[in-house]
Length: 454
Ligand SMILES: *Cc1c(COP(=O)(O)O)cnc(C)c1O
Image 1: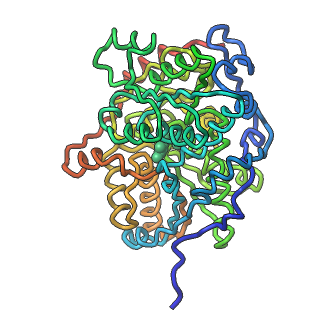
Image 2: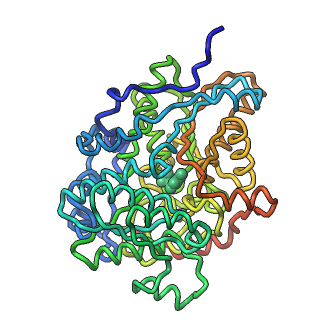
Image 3: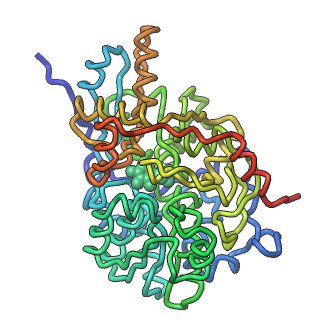
C-alpha cells in the first residue's frame, strides 16, 4: 500500500530568492497614481513623507525580478517555505474527483500571510533610519504582523485598530501589545481625522478608510515615523509573490499543476501573492489557469464596484489610484471577516480583473462559515473568516467537478488561521449570524460621491 502524500514540503534551500513583479508582464502599464491635491501624476516626492526610498522604488518598478535582501530571507526562513497540503480528507467528505490543495500561510508567528510584507517593510524603513512605524488594522492581523516585524528589527509600532474589531477581538490587541506595539481604537481622539468622524458620528464602528487616514496623519506629522500599509499597494503584492513562487516549485515536485487558483480578496495581497506567478505563466505560456478572487457580499468591491480613480482613505490624504471601488466613504457592515472590509481594491488586481485575466465572485458570511466548519472538521485547521471565503469557492468548484466528473486540480490560499476569531465562530455556531447584502442604492450613493477625473 502506498502512503498518500499529504504534505508537499519545499526544501529550505529552495526558498525563492527573488520576488516577482507582475508590472513587468501587464498587457499595458498601470495608470499612474495622482496627487490628491493637484491631481497630476504622483512622483516619488509625493510618497517620501511616509515611505522609505526602497519601497517607493519597488512601488514604481517594472523590473520583473527583485532580489530579497539576505536579512529578510533569514527571517522568512523562520516559517518559510510554507507547506502545500493536499486536502484528501476534505475531498473524501465532498465525494469529489477533484484534487484540492491549500497553501498554508497560517504557519507564521502572526498566523497569516501578512508578515511576508511586514518583514521587508520594517527592514527597508530601518535601513532608511526610521525609528517608528504607524499603521491601521482591520481584523487585527496586519497590526499583529507589523508589530511582530517591528519587534524583529527593534522599531516602535503605533497601530490604529478599527473600533468594531477592537471590541470584537480584544486578544488581537494583547498580541500586538505583547510584541511591543501601542494600539488605539479608531476613530480616536488622537488625530484631526478621528476627532472629525467622532463629532459627526460618536457611535461610528470605524472602517479601514478612517483608520488609514489616522495612521497617515500620525506618520506625516513626525519625521521619525513612517507609515506601513498591509495590502493594496504594488510593493505589498510584490512581497506576497513569494507565496505563488513557492507553489510553482511545489507543484513541479509532484508533477501536477492547478487548473484553478483561488484567494480571498480584501485589498488583494494574498490573492495577488498566490495568483500572479500563475498569471505570468498564463500570459507567457498561454495556460488556461482560472484565477478567482473571492469577496464578501457585504463589501463587493470587484463584483459590484466601479473601475475608476478614487482615494485610498476617507480623509483623502492618499494619492488617487485607479481601482475598483465602492467609494472612499463607503462604510461596510460590521461582518466578521474584518480583513475584507476595505472599500477599494489593489490597482494591480483591479487592472487584471478589468482586462478579463481573472474572475471574481462573492459570498454571504453564513455560507462562508458553513465552509469553514466543513474544512475544520475534515482538515483540522480552523480557518480565518477571510480565508474561509476562498474555501467556500474551492468547495463549490469541487462540487461542480462532482457533477461533471472532472478531476480538476484546485489550489486555494489558506491566508490565516482563526484562533483569534472565536467570537465569530460562536456567533455562527449559536445560529446568531446573519447575512448582509449591501443595498444597491447605498452603493450608488457612495459611487456618486467619487472624485471626477478626466
Ligand atoms: C488581511 C487578511 C486578508 C485580506 O487581505 P488581502 O490583502 O486581500 O490578502 C485575508 N486573509 C487574512 C488571514 C488576512 O489577515
